[in-house]
Length: 239
Image (cartoon, rainbow, N blue to C red; front, side, top):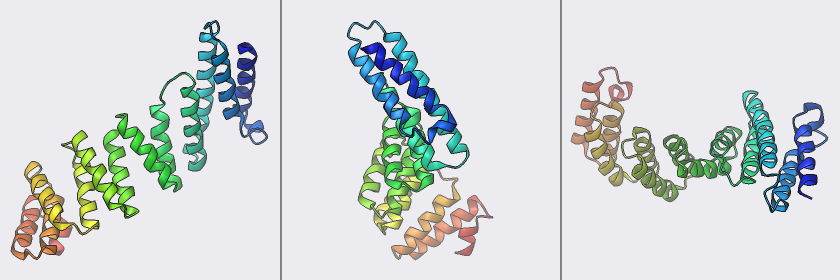
């Protein structure tokens, strides 16, 4: 019966919220999630719709609190797991947990689970939740893995979504430089410098690219421009 499964879920929800019982019942949240899903499935007439919804949200809030507490304690793997579980909990109601996806990415990134971080950040960006940040982080993570083709493809997608984002422009240029794609970097930098001429780091990057393309005079001019914009800019001073 639907009611029986809902009661089962409520019991596991209570267990999940009692710290002294969590080690004995580490799968309390997944079991509660399955129970509520089954209760919803059997409630064909919607007789217990509101009760099930409330029970699911109670479970979600319990798991969310556990995830936040773990994150604050810098127990990032634990918080990651909770934020992933939260997504399954809300899915019972047919909802997408944008916050959980984003937080799972943050936690996975800090815990060193790079593939999970990339997947979570991509999903978050696709949903438009902290999209600029998620695109920037994902591009950087892909670059660190030397997955340049994926990083470049994602950077183009990100530029279309956030054409004025200096963070994304910089991330894209870093990929070009890391992959030693200097001609592509030159094209992007020249445009970026026109759009943001007061950024000394942009002019410095142009200088680096021109140097690598053996365009020494243009490189010197770029370094000079960087110093004109900011006389104290350290990198250009060193060049």
